[in-house]
Length: 192
Image 1 (cartoon, rainbow, N blue to C red):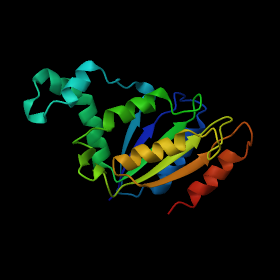
Image 2 (cartoon, one colour; image 1 turned 135 degrees about the horizontal axis):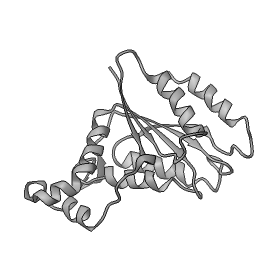
Image 3 (spheres, rainbow, N blue to C red; image 1 turned 45 degrees about the vertical axis):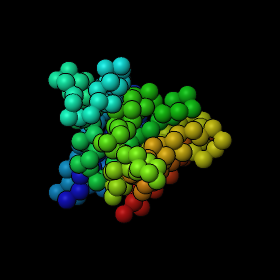
């Protein structure tokens, strides 16, 4: 049985190429007994704040009820990620980077003692053994170009928490090449 966590970062519901491609990718990956958890960041996501930071850096055994409440949403997002063995993220490029909501999600799930830890040999990701697919869409920023600031960032962040098996579904530069979405669909059809 596979458990797929789908994280949609497109703020568009209608006409979103990344959502359409993610629909096709999830359908390709899912089996009859798959569990699919959907996290739509367009519906809103909390930002970290001073209370969150204070609670996060307090030893879990010493947290007050207020601190536990400050971390409740983050704890739920981390649990979703722990339970999944496959991660599908839609990552449209907004102003040369990931949407603010995706950055907020990353801030909520990249937590010391929860998804990574520091060791004498440096940081160690705790979410190993997972596969991530990132559906990248953009108007003019092409994946792998000098203006691509998201693929390296997302690969680094996911690797930092232990997810090193990362594949990109490339539908970038749609204003430069209208066939990119169809090419991305072809790539999805070849996903094993």
